[in-house]
Image 1: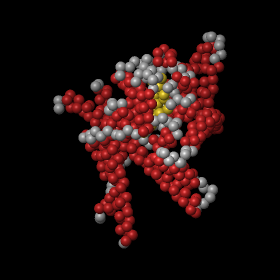
Image 2: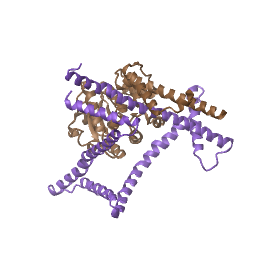
Image 3: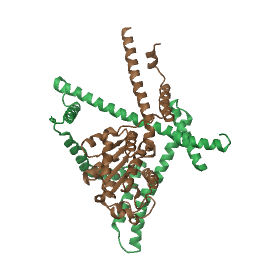
Image 4: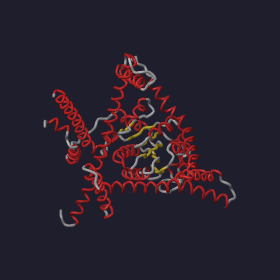
Length: 275
Length: 231
């Protein structure tokens, strides 16, 4: 059996093993290569830099626990950037897991930057109804979320005094592993003209590029790579940068495997034809 | 780092490995982890939905409506209207009883009607008109050759892609047949980009699990080893 025939009949478990090693080795011996910054990521950073201090921002946590590793680094990076620029952040979620995610991320980032709950940021929790929930939030925050995620009436939170409806929102950033970004574009950008940016899982990123081109989405952090780029911009390395070496080596391995398997296929195909 | 945390980390580690064993072959350990995941997810979603939807929206509002009507003598229509949503919800559940399953069509019709009414105008505006507007761009920009090439490619991609999906005439000849073939190529390129991003997403999840073993599981192993006197 020739080399190419062996490649064609390679047990898929060997491929899994190669891929596992391609991920594990760079995690043990990191190369520490920083990613270059793409235009959609820089747009988000530049927009936040230009926002005036104390602006009201909405951060939506629309991802499930299963995609935490892909979505949370972006949420942390953007929350850190907003809070470090003294913006006021109100978070809410269109999916059940979002409440837990937002409570954890906001507490950790807020505590790290010495920010106070209720004054600098607030977590409103989960609301069902996707587009109806967004519409309701845009029209009246108080009636949509009478209490925050901790059960405290929102009118008692100092941050909520100047935060009543969509007119008070200067910027909305959504971290989603589903179609939430599309909903926010439809309801917040098209209807209420709120600047919308987002972070999504890498699977969803290609679907969102047309919105970038049309200007409906001012910026996009696509998957873990987008988060890593943002971490470079805010000069605060986190999970995104930690994962980049493993991600790059794994991509290179997959590309190499695709290439060699195609070559092997065509070589054995030609050999068979000659016979 | 408490004992509860260490048990949680080890349980997460065990379940991760149990799921990974499927890569070798299907086995009872994988099946156990899979069923546990489905069960825990369903239970978690039920609890979250009860506490975040049913309790505050339905029971909470009906309690407010009852209190204002009985104790204050004021009929709170807004609060009572939640009862209507509750009745619709019960009607939807009747689908599981074959004899009265037809009742579930009414709330379904209500939801479809409401969804369509809410969706059509915004979808039309955000995904059709705005996208159409951004596609209608100038293809003659001699001062900006980069944008000009991009706009020409965009125009070719959109037109040939649309021709490929135009099934009323046969895709033959130089114009329709050729454009259709270019359309396929454009679609293939977009599928390639989507596949690349999908690979990135899946690898991210894998990296996440290995990172968990490195940053969370490994330190607990160190603690256990030290506590039993092995360093």
